[in-house]
Length: 114
Image (cartoon, rainbow, N blue to C red; front, top):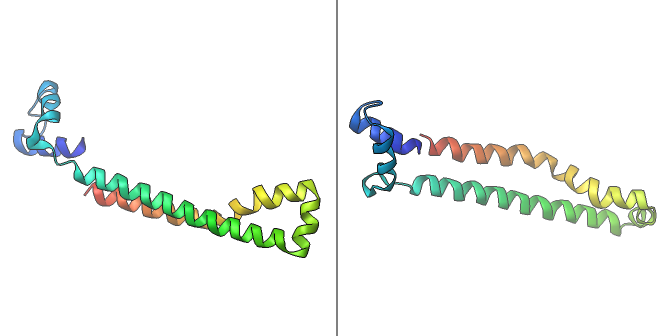
């Protein structure tokens, strides 16, 4: 939408078109260069999925290792400890990856707006 507005501002001058012309331009092939937003959306989705997938594998691997150890087995006997190992530890382990995931996603958004 912002790209269309920029193209129309270049052609008609800033604000030199009305709402009807803008709506018509949405369907005009002349203005349809929508691959950039689509590619950006796909890239953001891929980064989000990829980092969540990797973080999930890392978190579950660590939790599985802890649960398989002697101390982990003793803790698994305790219901509260079982809850902590299976539900609390994996998110905490992967918590440090979240800022980097957000950084990559916002980077793709900034690049697409240029």
